Length: 427
Image (cartoon, rainbow, N blue to C red; front, side, top):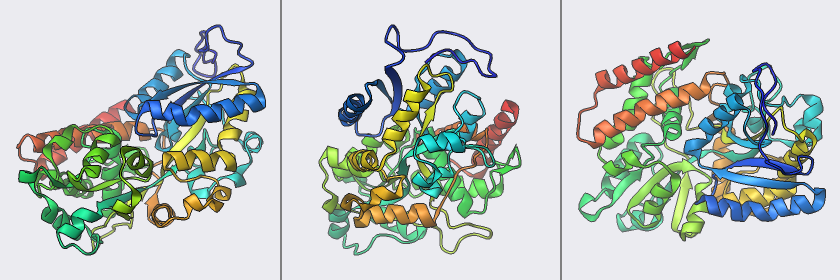
């Protein structure tokens, strides 16, 4: 990819080294599988297929989620980056605002199958409202509660929890610290996971995170929402304190598969990761994440954001036509069936759901959540900053709880107020 021209006024040579830019693309793929190596094993046959069909070689680098946003932002500033990149769909408007990505107006969308190729909910999380999308969907995701059937049966629990109070009660019954077993696992060091739970619980409490461009992170509703999440570790003690340092899915899923954790709240790509770890689908169940019942005044029935992964094309790609051909390939019904099945994600094109692999009860649960009780994170330029600041605040609060320090409303408010001021300063 060549250096960024655009309104950023940047210059520089692109990635790809001495390779023929007309027949080579660089692609940054997000880490979807249990390991970066497994991602490559899944992707490479499809990249080989693409080369055989088009003559274009795709050089792929799989990047962990913990590094991906910073890598992309560095590329938008330096001009050194890929032709095509996976982005978390919640970052769409933030990255759109850099001016570094090709806009998918109607003519450009037509090159990759047209607007009607994609699920409307997934396409809604591709950029700011009223502007052409800055990306297109490739993998669909939503949250659910995974529970270990064997541990439930051993404890005499006949049904998964359906309310938040029941979740705490069941998690408490299943927590046996002397046996190194805990009721619930969380990713306490993942700023993205922390931000997602702050958002969805905040919406259940009636929080509005922004008033126009003004952040409202420290509202009483947000304090209550964050308290609800942190209390899983701080007050209810159903989370292993070591989870405050957990950063990636494999850590909590390994504990779940080993029977060290009875439940996890995680996105549907955990299905493929559990398969890789060796836990068959028959050993666990999946239900929507339980909500507070009744909801607080003004609360919304939200237990997931419209999650997923999009494809962006850098506007200064040396091979824009090849990049669009590659996007069209990855979003074709054929590849959607192959890749989403391998990664345990949801197809973002309706035609892929004809495959029996996407007609299981587990997939139907996640599809239902995505359709009925999921809400997009704010599609505003400041969204990535929101995730970073709120996620870091929760990380600090969870670390404090894990070390045995008290976490009360005042402590939570102070952390959120600091994040609020940082957000205002960032503009």
